[in-house]
Length: 90
Image 1 (cartoon, rainbow, N blue to C red):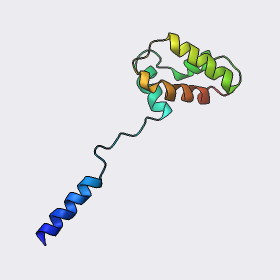
Image 2 (image 1 turned 90 degrees about the vertical axis):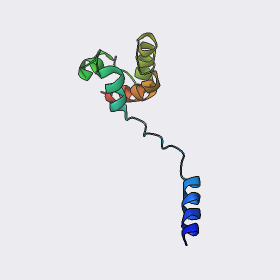
Image 3 (image 1 turned 120 degrees about the vertical axis):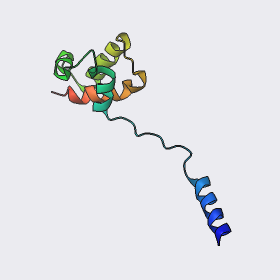
Image 4 (image 1 turned 60 degrees about the horizontal axis):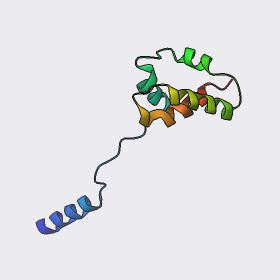
């Protein structure tokens, strides 16, 4: 019986994911980590600085701005971009 249990546990261990990946941050979490912690505490001021226009126009403007603006969380830029496009809808 013990050998069966050991074999079963070994089988389970072999099919389990090696390392669970942490969930991707939400847009708000990505903004807070990449922008809100130091430079841009007021999200409302950032949103007001984004020119009005269609989603595509705002996305292009934000992307161009982010390309010129330092961010210590480059991996979070796509989530931040999506978040700011959504939050800047007027």
